[in-house]
Amino acid sequence: MTQATTATGPSGRTYDFSLAAWIDQQYAALPSQPLRFRATDEDAWQDWQDRLRSKIVELAGPRPDPSPLAPEVIEAVELPDDDLIREKVVYQSEPDTWVPAWLFRPRTATQERLPAVLALHGHGSRYGKDLVADVDHGDPSIRASITRLNYSYGLQFARRGFIVLCPDARLFGERRGGPGLPPDSGGADQCDRGGNKAALFGHTMLALTVHDDRRGVDLLRSRTDVDPDRIGCAGLSYGGTRSTFLSALDDRIKATV
Image (cartoon, rainbow, N blue to C red; front, side, top):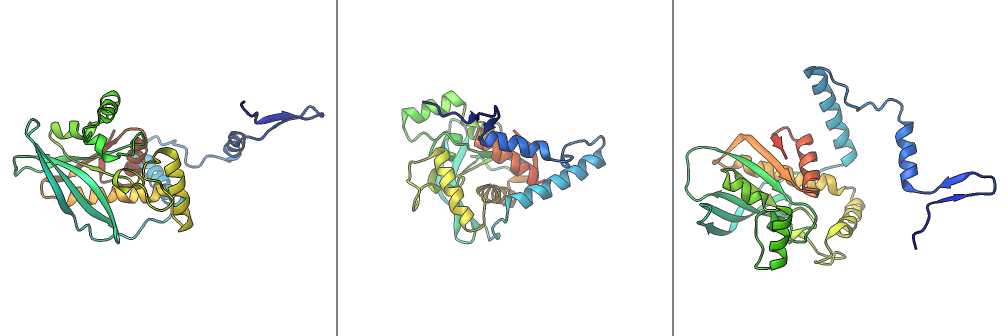
């Protein structure tokens, strides 16, 4: 049975109890939508961008203090068919908080600085970064998901000559689980639980995730084989959300997919 969200009283008045009705009321009550895009020239566009960025930062809440990246490569695998090396690199996002990521680079070193892409995974799987990097752990169901959703865009960018970083977001991949967060819960429920716990400490998952992704940009820019002025990001589903906010808040990102 589907429960109704409206009711009509003897007076003939219809009551809408839904959250959607409240959201519509709030939107309609906005006096002038001050951040609506109305720019007609570059100066107005820049002014709008600055104001929008400030508002997003304000609403997202505080971000953690930065810390030394202290990166370490803990695994390296040659992919001779693609002329690539896939490394597992670990780096520090905030004090004592570490991000595991796959990094693709050419097998043959070059003096040329290469463009780079931060390839951001979405929901869809507890495996996080692995699908983006085409790592299926020998599981046919994972391989089917990669194929069906064209999920291996991290590897595909690397094949086209980019340095590629595929990090795990909080609550996914090797960063899932923990007290109150079953290792395989995945999906929206995992995000809801994690978001509630972050809120207890005055944080939002959006701010924490964007902070981690910006640290990924820091890592790419620290590499001598990366052109710091040619860094982009790409993502699917939740990865698209991450890409949207990362590029909105970090002007070091030059292209977004």
